[in-house]
Image (cartoon, rainbow, N blue to C red):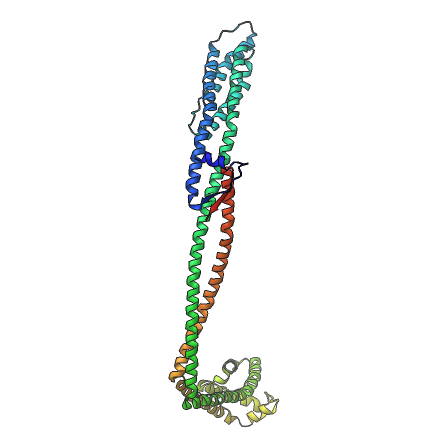
Length: 423
């Protein structure tokens, strides 16, 4: 059947390309390969049989050399060489031709070429000394070995064609499998893209719904007078907390400067500087967040610092420091008062914030806003996945026609004619 196909597709025939379904490719390649193997086997039969026949004849001629009569008028040295060369030559030829001949054409060709090489090597080795003693017999042996070479030469183009076809069969199968894998991957990617796009649309719809619900919550919250009053009060209380924080900073700032001077002096005197250093660090780190415990620490180190100011060890360089330490008994009460005021202001602020957070519209708006953020994050991830999937689809849609073109080229080479694949 495929010989007819090749004949129809042979160059010079003005016929349209043969259309082959992609599903037919495995069967077509398999049938074509079986057809070629049968043809190769038939075309190898003659040189194979001839090679086997010549090999048998050559074995007979070589084994008969030892029994052949020869003149003993040769030089004794030649006679000795001849006696040694006959068994060596016979063994070399017998070994070369005793290889098992497998039925596979390529394997038989391999055995035949190795056998021929062995015979040629034997002829050039121990056989070269026998031509003088057995001129007629060795002439016949050479003719037989030459005939083995002729048969190997006859098989060589057939085996070369077989190798070429085997490569084409392999390429065709690899191309077919690659196309099928790409098609399956493309179908899977398209299905995945469809699911991702549907999911993205669902999320977009849900986001719009939540956005409208958020607007409704904000509208209801804006219409609640008590809530709006609380929102305004929250701003006032927040400002009050901030203002007290600034007062605390204004109070602790000169303390830190003066305490730092005291620490330097005490470092030179090697005593008492560690606790002052600790107080300075706490005042600097905590700033407006001082508490009763820190006020107590200030109270403990303040007498030492005041004594150093009174003794003239510490010089107050600006009016702020002078005013601050002009009545040192007021420093700790002032700090304690600020701590209490800040606590009260923060407590009032927390109550208002809790009232605002507990309002149904505000509470729901916060929940909705959280859901919207989650949806936005999900849509970003899905969007990235959609872009990557589309790019993968684009690449596969480009690669599949290229693979089909490659497969058509291999099929044209196999069938010696124009082929078009139906995908």
